[in-house]
Amino acid sequence: MLAPWDAPAPEAGPASRPNAAGLCRAELGSLLTDLGEPGWRGKQVFSGLLRQRWTRWEQFTHLSKALRTRLEAEVDLAWPSIVQSQPSADGSTKHVFELLDGRQIEGVHMPYEDRVTLCLSSQVGCAMGCTFCATGQMGIIRNLTAAEIVGQVVAMLNHQGHAEGRPINLVFMGMGEPLHNFDNLMAAFETLTDPEGLAIPPRRITVSTSGLVSGIDRLGACTRRPRLALSLNGTTDAHRSAIMPVNRVWNLEALAAALGRFPLQSGERITLEYVLLKGVTDGLEDGRRLVAFARRFPAKVNLIPFNPHEGSGFEPPEEARISALCRLLSEADIPVSVRRSRGQDVAGACGQLVRQPRRGS
Image (tube, rainbow, N blue to C red; front, side, top):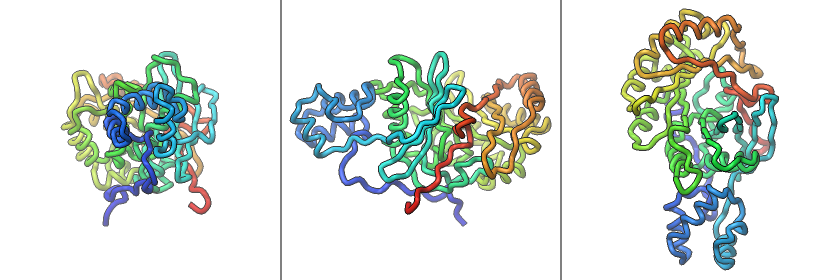
């Protein structure tokens, strides 16, 4: 019997005409050539879309009025639209995006003193079925397109009034399993890192996987790629398989082998994300097994106290247990930090993102 992630996720329905917002620089050059314009016009349009973050053809005043009129008539410029924003007391904001087909996804804008971090979704729903994650209870609905992934970045930066030159970090830790949407993910990565656009350095982009080994191997084969994080959350196969069904296919040994062969740059480490569930994953024996796992390849550990959501059946750990696990990892020379997920009061924290299907959809 095939697992839900063995089959490709459904894709968005075909568009009636091209959408410039979803095209890379080369594709925009081809599109403009097809319209009888020189190919370098594509670079101008790309820069307007990503560097200036324009959202309407009338803003492209460096193009002739005749070309703007033709683009308006023949080419869409459609980013996801923000339909709801919920500011948190900690300064972060959860945004709800509506897609062209009426589906909704969520993302989170998290400002820090020296940077801004955007948490992005890669799918509508998720096939992985992790029991502690609200998104996992939705099931998989469809992949996001490259335009819908990039559009979350453009929409959040425009909405929040992003200052020119302020560093941007992107984390694919929202709705969906990014490596289950590999092709659209990497197409978006190329657009987001393009020096003529947002020019986000690859080292500032992190993709978090639940343990899709086939996707880890594909990512490792890419010449240019984002950083890798693993949502580990269990140190025995029994525990991990109970809360993360993917472990029943690729167990901890298979995961360690995949991470051990993943090609790392000098100084690069794989991030191990470890959600602390009271009485399930927060014991000292869990910590000792976590140390043993992390020593098998260059790694750093993020301990993430569980963020409660309705119907999960789990509770966050006690502070004393978090401190004890931090000490245990530090004494073993494993770099460790506690990630206090932001946006908990607006259900925007790690594992809390979920959208209910609209009536009739």
